[in-house]
Image (cartoon, rainbow, N blue to C red):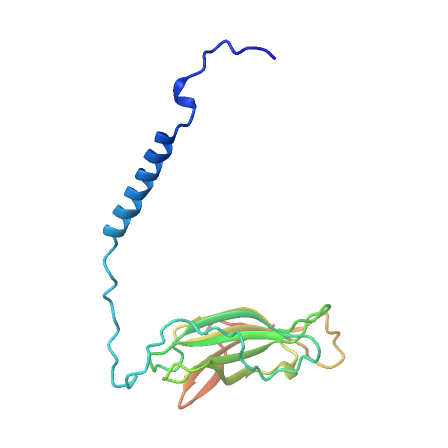
Length: 192
């Protein structure tokens, strides 16, 4: 074994005093951190007459566990797009989602649904079907803008068109009017 050219330093050997000093320092940090806590949060949302004392629900709705009106057989349904905003002007957000079956091959048709929850903060539920999967449409562009749902839909001009190759492209806009979602074509949209 070769000897080191540098003499051993006295402070490299741990002694009981080192452990005592370390334990004292850790105890001081813990004690100081318990004294220096951030102030408690004080923001609260007052319950207005429209909420009747129910918990305020202001964030986007989570579509997990929602029972969508789509038949997928042995495969599960898959939420592929979602957007949230106040669509009906009641001050609570709705969430529009694009859902299709999680097929191993091909492009399964999409369904577009609007979710909401009751004022009491219950579980989200489907309140409108904007695109039914039975219509064999695929949603490409999808957004909520100015209180409306906007989507580009790919489809088929006849049953003879192969599923791989949609030959119809529509732009659609759904807005809440007189208690229902009404479909129109957005301004500036062109059909192919």
